[in-house]
Image (cartoon, rainbow, N blue to C red; front, top):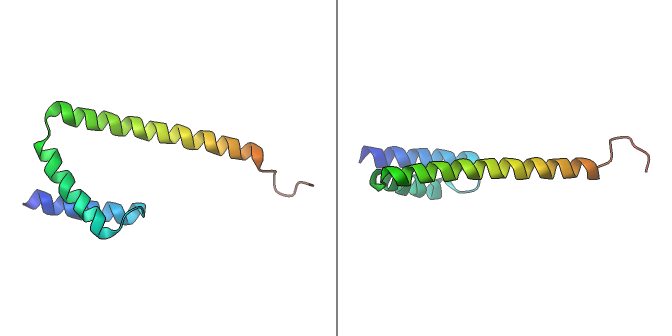
Length: 81
């Protein structure tokens, strides 16, 4: 019971910081996440961890490529047009 409450609090806080979800949605996800983590096997936890890391690396590379592309498209400040 305590784990579910702490998971809901963590989910709510995370949702408020990311801005993608509201506090109630984050609390529900945190509550469900705590329950799922408790029921998962060790290979399942490893798969979720590796998948999260891979997603993080993919997004970082994508954002870096987009920033590089935008740097070539945007003229420097004060440049004559």
